[in-house]
Length: 605
Image (cartoon, rainbow, N blue to C red; front, side):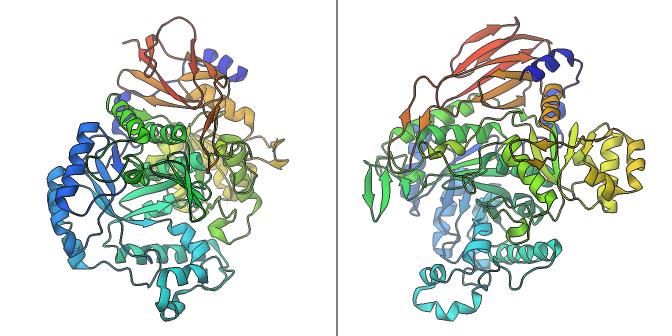
């Protein structure tokens, strides 16, 4: 932190992008088509048009959202619903309405008559999609799970036995011998399901990092499931946002209330069928609100509080009386509508090979290949340098607070997007810094893209591995611009060679972030707005939660940080507390346990 603060003073000459430059360029925020801001959905909608309109009226009165994820399945019998929904004017995500939604070659196929039901929404210019949920987890973990198939197909299980994949092959028909073979198999699976879901797919991945591939393969929206028992929240955000910018697609976040054998619902804490339920079950309301706000600030087009129709109301029927969770959600939605989040400023693009198949949950490329030293460096970059402590799958969670791993302090800020090596030069050149990570194949198209980025002023950070892979092309790229050979560094936290040193990461943050953040460990991100810059500060300490019990709060776990702008500014205001600051030195901010603060700095004009 001391290095970052000193560099912030010394490197004040850095040129930061103007608001219009970001808001209209390759790094702009992509919204759902037909919308003007974030879509905050209710999870579940009555199929009866009159009951649906009653719910919409209550949501409008309570300020409780502006969309549905999911609505009814698009079947001919639901046409009246979609005609009513088209008049409401909100986006709607549909579920396929069949238990074998993820099974390639299964019975879950929507046809032309089903697609015709969505025509009223199309005519109104409203976004619709059909969810393919948690397909990466299905592919690698359920496609060969016979008990799961029996649960799905029941008495017809034997008729569908041919759809089971061989055990021990992570969803593949035979053991793949290359990353290209894995890519082709996974793409074939995804495209098959997309065709069966009317070509309207919103991809939702939870336990895998396949967001860039879903975007490449045509997903209408790049969806993430977080919460639940899913790790790697922040790296998944970086993958999804990078894919959104590369492929010009919106991205979304679905916060799941499942947490161990527990799920948030309305009513008192209780156990039913071995599962804890009630408002105090599942994840804490504090984490829910932090994720909703962070997803909005990070550039998501849509935020879906999962199971919310059963959480936000005392009962899912008129008069739609809100619970504590419903009131908090309405407060968050009002806050979002009252503020301009601007454009997320992520000056560093981490570039992986197009065929990398990064999969944090399986800890193997494409869920099955043995990781190379380059793969291990990439994994360590996310898990031990950028978002340390986010892996509760391969490391034991804090037994006193297993929720602590879901959002983590960021030593270098949320300053990174993830791209693949098939990104064009225009996309790479939008970032001041490109960090090459892992094993990369420098095919002619990628070399040309790197060359374009260098000639436009992007600094490319490479390792000796990349220099060796480039061969004679290394000297040619050096003539194009600033390609930097990183010093070898072994991370003391892992004992392994790292993709980049901690000191070099600190210098990147000091040079390219417009506000230096020092003090207590905190999660932070910085966005560009028309009037200046906004810093998001998330204190993830102080709220302890297990799935089957109420959250506890440590009132002493306050985070105190100091913010030092590296541009001329006139004033600063904390959006949530309302506290103002004059343009004198640093700005000292305290963030209560489990809360988020936003500090807006107004630039000198």
